[in-house]
Image: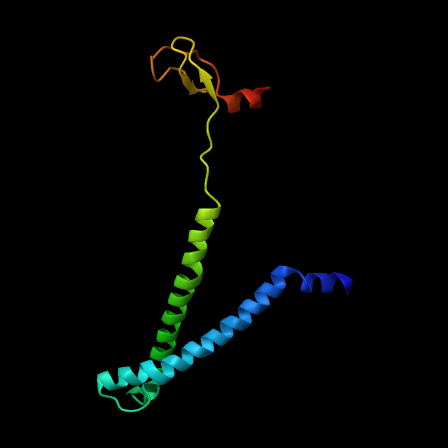
Length: 145
């Protein structure tokens, strides 16, 4: 039981539980907004009076409730937009600012002719075109040894 208790009290599990509860509450709010405001506006625009989520069409006696699907689709798009613009976009900007990516520099040596700094794996100098020497790449030299 002690290990299970420490697992439950770890920060990640608690954060995940809080996120799920807040996500469920936010989903309920968005679904209420879509049902109360957006679908009646769509109903007014399309000439349907009342609850647009109850609109159906029939084909050979089979009913297709496309109004309920439209409610779910609008809710999904709103939730996805809010999550993207209020969570994903700020987090990616923050992580780009706080965790800058550094380019990995190749090891450098000086050219024996012009003393310019060139990559250690170079066979020719980029500045004076002098032949530096035919030596193996640094990775190959380590694997052979």
